[in-house]
Length: 89
Image 1: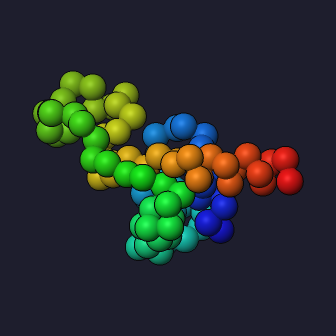
Image 2 (image 1 turned 120 degrees about the horizontal axis):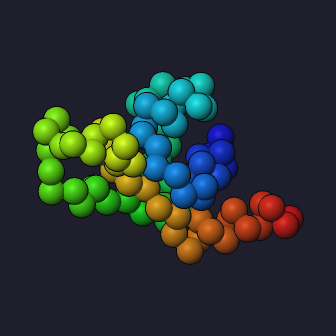
């Protein structure tokens, strides 16, 4: 399941925790714990979206890729190598 999360992050598409949990068929709190575990193990890094606007008043809310997303997750070099090895291995 952790590999599936890495693959979702590797796709580069902004996805909310709720969407990711629904896609994987898991509860949000479980997926959040898995993301945090992957970060602790060095496969992912995260940061808060750098938008200075509040979503409720933003005119781009309907098309924004980060609206409603608390954290943005990125693959680290270790995560990228893992995905690459899975595809070729």
